Length: 471
Image 1: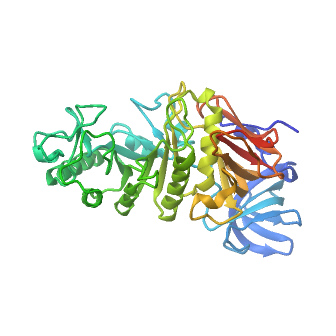
Image 2: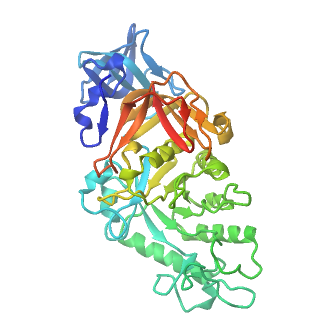
Image 3: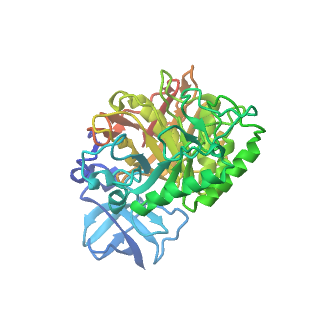
């Protein structure tokens, strides 16, 4: 079978290789609204592309309804063979909004010095990036390019030289002996007291100053509701009180907040209590999301299940879930970890709320990976309440999608499958998938590519393995 390769820089040249076999001859893709129904199909308003375009539907046409009716006014993306005189549809995907399938899942990264890439035009980054952590010197330019921006703040931890470190003692948290509480890994960084009105005013002033100088869609709040790594607890500390007071502090800011706290799990590796910050926030970040630094980068066991369940809860509440996979190893050598991460992410992701932020390293210092261009839509089963519903055999989790795309181009049905067992191989649960996603090279701007017709899935899934399979 012809070897199909997806390189971000060459997609325009190979679109005819990306669609199902039934649509490859003179393959084209159009999007628009259905204008009227015809005896053999419908007329599509394709805009400037071809105007009103007749679409022929046959017995072999795959129609992905997404709960919509094949009727005038419905938006449709059509893939098939033909030209501006008419299309023989191989696939029709219906949706309730205008526009085509996203070119990638929601992504985030640092952009600009000191942590992010700076060497490419903004339009290049905008092709792959949804959210950027930026500073006041570049945030407005990023926003003009179509990238949402967030401004970093940390009202919960401060050290000398930081913008909320003051001489006002009430802004710092103290133990019952009146001693400031610091971080175990950095004794110069102190825990701040969220009860302090002075601290609240300082944070508001910092945020307003940033917003007056550049456009920011959200204020990032690091270490929210977080006692991890502190030398002691604040005097008379009660978790419920600290959470409620942090919510009150957030509400007083007067700006959308993305907090970082979801990676601090509750007792027994359960979902973080800090998910209660959703009531005053746009969303939250989870560090160590499916991938983390160290010799054992892949999450597993109860932790992996909690990450999945957190992703589901955030989607159900309509909050951004910033999945920060902070494995810092070279992307070019991490294909196995990247596949595990992406398959895990797809199992429970929501196209509107799940944000993938990875930190694999590469020469460009741009951390978005090419596999983020794979967008899975039209799941065969409804979104579950918990990831346990996706366990198809012991420690193997899977979710099937009826319509999958690479950079907006249809590649047919696909399935994300993950063996979470650290020690044992497990059987691959399906027989109808004959190809797999293959990753080559590094990040999206470091020559990385993805293949969708890799070899058939192996009968046995190795321990801690993720597979994305295609028919």
